[in-house]
Image (cartoon, rainbow, N blue to C red; front, side, top):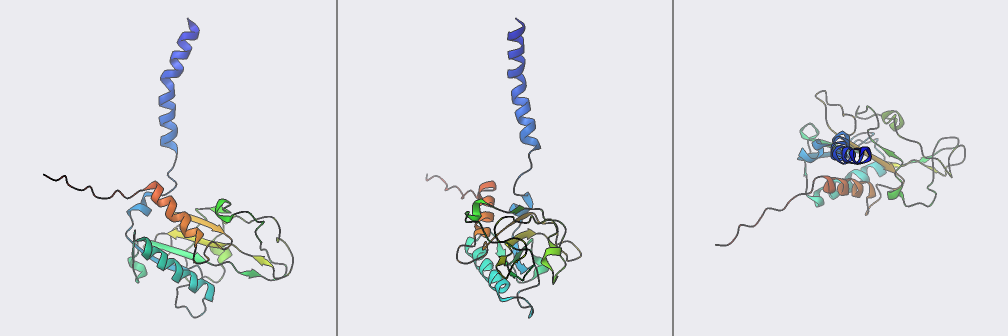
Length: 212
């Protein structure tokens, strides 16, 4: 009799526990990303027409902007202050001797993301040291790390942020980094973001009214 009562109690509590666990789980994609309408793209070291911006970052901005326009979920704005979301890119760079860097170990980078946001507070435009702008970014380990020649390679980074009233960027709502993740034409970092958003917030096509 006691065994039967215990089984009955477990069966009664299971739905409650499952509901509480589901409620406690935070969404992978914040609602602000779904609610956004306008977007802007810049680099961690500055905006597209900054004369000091590396060519790789300029190309990443242009490639990502084209991909966003092709996607069609958001409207691109040329006025940063009017953007609901700001996409911040940073292309990986070769590192000099003794600096930290890394070369992939042969694993598919899209299945081996090195870090996941938020990456910490950042947002001062034109910062010259990306490693300070992303203090929480995880460091990759494996072949190519530590001292050595110019064979290291920092990962590409994509952050999706909002603008604060003071014009600085918020903590990233979404963030990923891995080697060559912003290389065209695949733009694997953007592909990851797009897939995650479409999975979390699928767009339902308008229903066709029934014919009389």
